Structures are given as structure tokens and as C-alpha cells.
Length: 280
Image: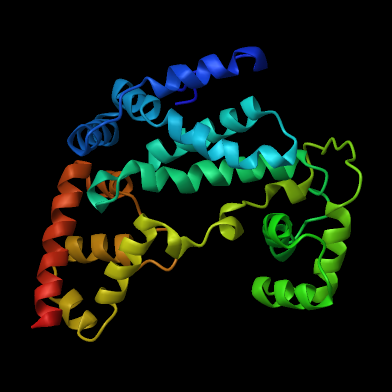
């Protein structure tokens, strides 16, 4: 899908690009669902193209929030577009969440990773706590200015880090910019920013899944699972009760030799049956 988004032009024509993407029409929920199903079930790249183009303005809007890092706006937008395409590829219209909400998570994560790869603190902020401090302290300092002892304690408590880490990061934030050319084989670049830059429970899709999972884990779960046929039970366990990454409709479709739509229907019927048994 890496050819679906519009290429970012030279800096001089960035405004032209922005004007162009703002002219792409927004999709209604019905259009979005139709395109997403066509992509999911048939690999329809034209449907994917419509989904990407209609959300390019969202990438521009999010990228503007990262202008303070001194990186080219065109590069930030390009990285955000990559996140958008990843979101489109993973989007499931049956979850009841609009693509705009789902895509924000992926766009921000991709831009965050780009900032960490290219800004001067990437080799300093190597742990999750340090990287979280890197982004949050920069935002806080816009309101607090130079931090005093009391503010350092407050920030450390809010972000769950040591006061000394806050002082060190503040010092580095106020220092001179340094050229940075990270090596391609640097293992520290392989840390995925999604794990620490966005709370999973803050995403609509994750919140919906968490709500469903919590409901299923309540009293009567085993009884409800036992009432299902083996195929339905396998689908529910793989989609909702897996401690790791949930299986996709396509993965289960390949496992059982049926369509993704058929897996979705079996899942919906099984969930409804379980809900009735649990709440009875």
C-alpha cells in the first residue's frame, strides 16, 4: 500500500499539497464501511486509495503539532502518511469505530518514531520512561518555563520517573542542537513507540475491545464457552481471550477455510449467545 498516498512535494510547494489534500471529499460512514469491507475481504486497492486520500488532511493536522522539533514539515507529513496507510490496512469496520479515530493512533506513532530517529536526544532517551519523559517534559515546559525544585518533584511524580531524570532531561532540552546520524543497525531504534506514546485504553477500538473482553471474563464465562461448538469457541478465544495479539478475521478464515465475512458472522453469533447466557 506504499504507493497509495500522494507524494510530498518540495518544501516550496508544501502549501499546494495541503490545499490539494483538503479538497479530497470526506467519506460518509456508509462509504467508509463499504470501502473497508472491500479492502478487507477482496484486497481492493482502489477502495484503500479512497480511504487514504480522504484522511490525508488528518495527517497534515497532526503533523503540525510537531513543528517545534525543528524537523521539515514535509517529512513529518510523509511519515504520518505511512502511519495512515498502516491504519487503513489494519482497520476493521465491524468494530464500530470510525477510521479517523483509529488512524490517529498509528499516525502519531509513526511521527513519534521519526522524531526519535532524527532528533538530538534519540541516543539519550533509550528507555520507555526516558522517551515518555522526552515528549511530555517538552510539552510541559511550554507552560512551566524553567523548572524549580517543586516543579521537578511534581513532574517526576506525574510521569513516574526520578527527579534526577527530570533535571537531566531539562538540561539537555535547553542545550545546543547536535547533529545525529543514527546507525542503521542500532538496536535502540527497534523500540516501538506505540507501547509508550499512547495509552492503549485511550484508543476507541481498544476501549471497545477491552469492554467486550471484560464482559466475557465475568462470571459464567466458562459455562458460556462450553455451550459453543469447537469452531465458535476457537474463534472467540483467538479473537477476545488471547493474552497476546488477537487473531484477525483473515487469519481465522485461512485456518478454517472459509471467508473472513463468515468468521465475522460466527463470531457475532457466538458473542450474542454467550452474552445471553452470562446475563441470564
